[in-house]
Image (tube, rainbow, N blue to C red):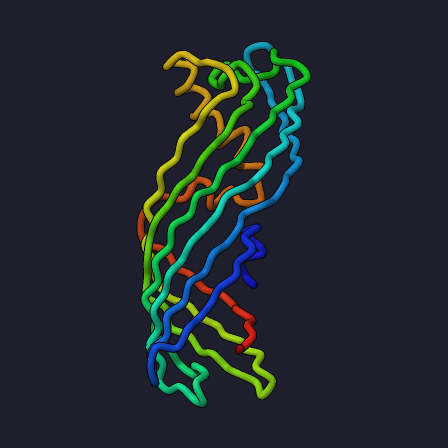
Length: 206
């Protein structure tokens, strides 16, 4: 449920393998829309203009996980667990930037509108420690936390053909003009390497 903040809507299935081990598969769809404004100021011309930025988020995430519980009661995994989890995620942002005066674009930035698709792919894995509790009616609640490693691959494809120089300039302009206005700016510019994950899950025992 904590993934809702990141616009990820996840459904998972956990299957008990034996008295202390379970296997879980989780799949998430990604979806959100943003409408942001950005003020551009050109120090050379003195022009100041506004850019309206529409961003459509879409994609998916897949996460397999194997857990080792302290105990399994009545076929239901419950209590403290340690798990190894993997994750693969593909996230695409369709960007539509409308600038009412291109003279207001800073000279160091890409001179046109940043219209196109930004893709972020990452894979990773980690170790989690958590606790799962089951009620008599089968409702489960779990919390978990632990270290993870992520490796990111990113690409930008403009709606129009760009030269190599324009492509590089457009990519350099994304963070200041697009990403810093986004609710997910930190994630969009995160570096590959170690991180920390935590979450809350509500489930139904079948």
